[in-house]
Structure formats: structure tokens, C-alpha cells
Image (cartoon, rainbow, N blue to C red; front, top):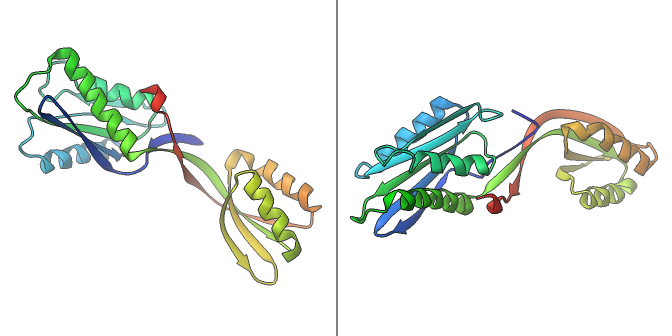
Amino acid sequence: MSNSYLTIKKTGNATITIKKSDFICSLARTKDEDTARKFITDVKANYPKANHNCFAYVIGQHNEIQRESDNGEPARTAGIPILEVLKKNELRNTTAVVTRFFGGIKLGTGGLIRTYTQATVTALETIGIVQCTLQKVIYVKVTYSQHKTLKNFLEKNNILLIDTAFTEAVTIQVAVESVQVEAFEKAIIDLLSARVSFEEGPERYIEHDYHLHSKN
């Protein structure tokens, strides 16, 4: 996976009703095709009386795997609209299943495309999108007199403070984008006149809320 990517905040769903038909869009993070297929199977099992369970998913750093299905709806009226919403929002490793309970009124080709699009967009807006950024954990050890200066610097520069330990010195645990580690450490040395020590920890993805509604 790249240094930064977008995905949904969590597994969830949202429902819209159009001309007496209910459309339930279920979303999940799916790391590979097996996970995506299992999620689709589970959604179908949750709604055994549904008329359709149309789906789309994107897998991989550059969405190398893209699949979609109309599941009995007219060709290109369901799966592709769902897939296009995922792609326009630049999501990775995400699966969407839109379950339809037919209400007796046909929507027509254009109506179906708009509705499956709307159902997916509504679910994304309800559940939320996050940006996952690869960051390195860094332990910064300073004196008590330096602590306030360092804390103010972190707040001013929107650097994530994970934890603070007070012993014979103050050790602050932060997360910094992996590509910015060298610049971060230099900035701290300049700020505190070099009287500071660093210990680098593991890399991990840190999530932040992200909004892309304008792209739908």
C-alpha cells in the first residue's frame, strides 16, 4: 500500500427509499478479493428476501482489481454506477453492496443508474471516509523545562501526540509521516538547541477524517 490512501471509516450501511423500493447500501473495508466475496455473501445472507444484491469493489494500491455486478438488474444500471462512486472518491480496498427490495414501481434505466449512485453516495456520507497515512512512531525525550515548548510546537504543526511519559525526563510519543521524519527531527533539534534525543519506533497507518463529497 502507498504512503497515503483513502478508505471508509468503518463497516456500515444506509438506506434510501425511491418509489417504494428500499435500497440498502452496505460498505466494508476489504483487503483482498476473498474478503470482498465473503462480505458480499454475508450481505446476501442477511437479506434473503431481497430482489437484488448488486455490488462493486476495488482492491489494491492502484485499484488493480475492480469488479462489479448488476445481479439481475438491467445491464450497466447498478454495478457500474456503484463502482464509479468508489473510484470517483479515490477509495482503496472497499466493497459496496446495494440491496434492493422491489416496491412494485419500475424506475427505468436512467432511474436505476441515479438510484444506485445515490444509495452508494448516501452510505459514504453516512459512514465517512478516512485518509490513512503511513507514519512512523517517534519517542522524543526532553527535559521538563523543554516540555511545554515541544508540546506547543506539536500543536501548532498538527503533529499527532500519542502519549506522554513523565519519569526523570519527559518522553513524548508522536506519529510523523515516514517521509517527514528527518525534517521533523531537525526542526526539534533547532527548536530545543540540540538538547534532545530520539528513538524511532514502528511504522503504522494513522487515520484522519476526510471529505470528498464534491467528487460524487
